[in-house]
Image (cartoon, rainbow over all chains, first blue to last red; front, side, top):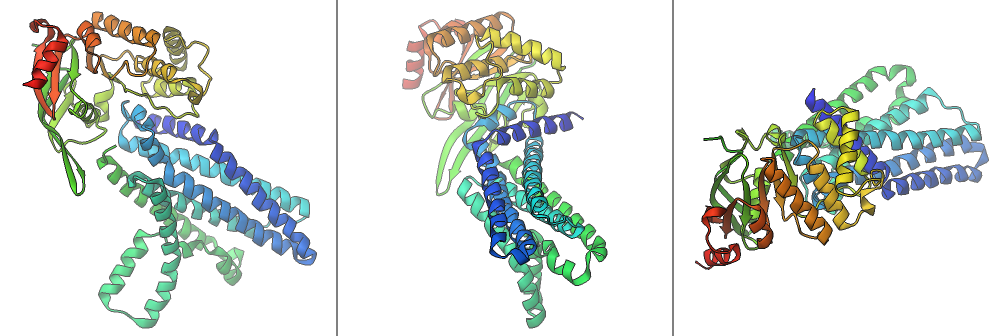
Length: 260
Length: 239
């Protein structure tokens, strides 16, 4: 019970910290500009404005989501260690695991609030232009949220052991790219049938890095239709939760041994 | 005999900045008993901050043990009855004292009313009343240090660790910190103070531990030191 109170108290502090941070407002302004740009782009082709608005709007939210979440996830712990504010918390009866989980939970609040804000702005634009928000659009946005949660977790992992903010951001970015590439390697493995040891190494990479192809719902949606996506969505949600728990577990193990 | 508030036994620590290995502590041992005000003295790089960081579990020792109130200091529960005031308090600039006190209230299991009352009392005590909703980024260095002192006293700690408590303070702040230390000493609060201010230590400490190049050179009750502390310190270091 005590641990839960500590975790929630710290998560609130972390959320307030980011909510008041100038960078947070920078991301919001950038998000609004990106989404507005997608609305302006509809002028290019009034006949396909719905398609432009959905594609570009979604891409805008994904892009700003990536940038903001990689940044927030990958720097929070390092920043607190660099400016020594972490000592304030750790000199209290607060374990390192509680500190890590509280910080992660606080960052989840930041992710949810940023994402809801971007979606809200985007849906207002859709409403103004007269595009109906369908269940397909909502599903695509749910998958994007899952994807951003994974990106946040990977960033957080690097933040918990790296000593440089830039290195942490680059490693997060690289891991996500590797996560995208593993799907392509899947295809080559089927084609080339390499030795067992290479397959084993590849499987290991696939477990360690997030499998980003899971979040490519648009192709799947076009293939099977919205009514047949329930099981897939459940599977991907469970994969995301499992992956987050796995990564946070490793982060916690590393962070508990780290000299601060 | 009372059980020690702090037990430090055979601490060893080497910083590994590959390819460099910098020995920081070698076989440091000492105990602090209830009511003692212990000064940890030494030149820069003597190992004072490393010792404090190990006690607070910010870093781990290569070997050795530290116990606070009989509990291994690696467990967070060991920090329930202690407070730490660092040389330079670092708080997130975006937060206000009110939010930080609220956090402390929750961690130390105080009700909202109790937290508010304590916060008002302590902020008035450190002459920061009316500043509870000002972001920490707007505070001067001295004000931050006073805020740190107020927060360090929040849960009536039985053991205070003060690392260079006078550094960066104006005369008013210095006086305030010294008064608090003398008052807490009278109340029987145990303290570990790291400082270079030998005059201040002379006035406040009851026991002197001198660290040099990661080793304890001297561990004496102040009453047993017959010469001025400055002379004693330089004599020990020179030997």
